[in-house]
Length: 313
Image 1: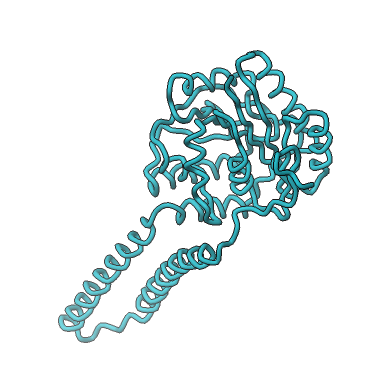
Image 2: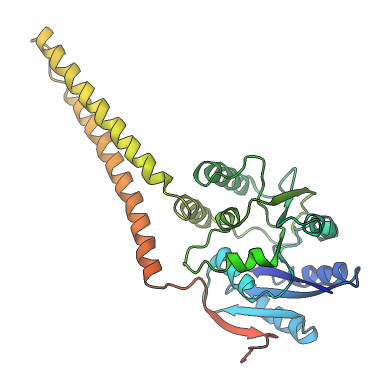
């Protein structure tokens, strides 16, 4: 009998987590050759989702709960779930009911055929224009920075082999970037077409701050291309400055009465100064992340675990 672990980061899902878990249990129950566990990670949600999870875990020992001591955002919650998953297959999904569990066995088929990872691909995302914009920018950035295949989609509903999970959780630094972790672990990733659902209740908690953090993490987590681009821009600016200096000297020799271009000089200085500060900021971001990683800042801090063998609650 194969076991499937469902990892669900929970934040603001007091009204949705129960129907999500009920549907998982119903769908897995359709096939007797599969067992399951549900690992719900409470990321310090401001609502009473923890109380709801306690009730669900009390009634079903296969529902396991991890309660964080502080909010670590979705990447940290996913990594905590993966570190505690024991299934042959591991599913990562959302807590809002948008993941189409009615197509779950279709999502599983590529793994049964020997592929490493299977990810849902939606023809149309059921999310706000703001979140669509963030998804688009992140997609284009990862295509350039970490060589993500252009036709590959990374969405909120995926399943992977257990050995892929074991390789992913070897990453212990405090800035996990899940797309980068998957792409550096395997190239055998399959997209499965299906329709995304509407949210059961509530609205997205994906704020501008979280979107910006995602972009910065994607830029700096698994590539030094931004630093190389900075070097190229520096070389380009130096060449332009050298040519402009020669042009100015020649122009002054040909036309001695020409006035000195203070405005253009100031504009160039501001432009070059802005580029220098931008590049220094980028280098500082890399150095800051190295410093925090050296200090062993945690990916997540577990306050309580329920229905695990090592549960000390």
